[in-house]
Image 1 (tube, rainbow, N blue to C red):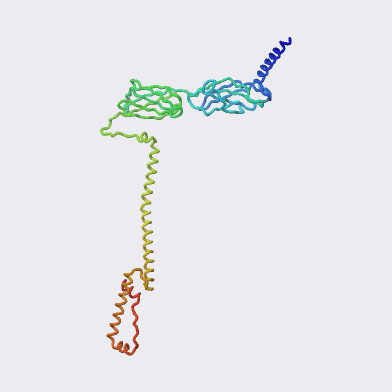
Image 2 (cartoon, helix red, strand yellow; image 1 turned 135 degrees about the horizontal axis):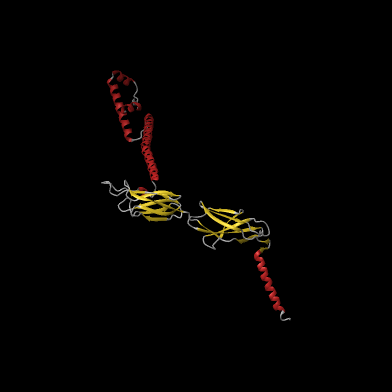
Length: 342
């Protein structure tokens, strides 16, 4: 009996551990966790996925505080996505043409409970039949073998192709959305057309035959070459015209202001030069040797002329004989010489 006691104790310990682990998985230290939400459903409509569910039948230790939403893009890949206190949720962060998978769990004061079953939603929009004819411009004759490509103008930007039959008719199933149709046929100019598909519709196309006009030069589609639309080209041209006109208008105005400014400077410098020249001449100061020599020559000529007049006058001779000899001063003034020079 004693030899079996340790084995019995070990078995009891193992069983107790298993029971504790099993019990711990269903509740937290703070109390029982809630069950998974029920009746989870999902539907796609107008660019969003609407989720709805019902509270769990067993809320655990307390009332449900919030719900945790899990999302994935393939089965079993769900990860935490959003949390809400409502039993409904609209997921707008989706892309067309994909399938999304969802699960929801409830959380109370003790923690998060188990997840609900998985639901999936396909975001592919409904498809509609688009049909019509491709005819020659100015005629009702259908163009057979026309290659038509329908390009989606919104994500996921898929393209769909079809060809016209012998009568020029076509029919194609297209998902709902905006499209650009590109038409190509031998002997005809390529054309493009934009339209919106919201239901079954008929869309006819007309192609212009190549070489109908003699001497018709090749037409360049600048919108395709530059990668911009016609309105942007017009706006750019208008802006360029305004800028060039402004520059052409400002150039002569600026040039005129520069000429006037230089003219005022020259006039002012001339006045200052004349003032300095007059002041220097009054004071007997000259700015160059040439003007000094000219001034001395004028003084000598003036003195010689005055002496000659005095010698020819009799009264002057008598006064010279009676008066003591004095050194004669020049009588010509700087102002007189300046006037003669001017």
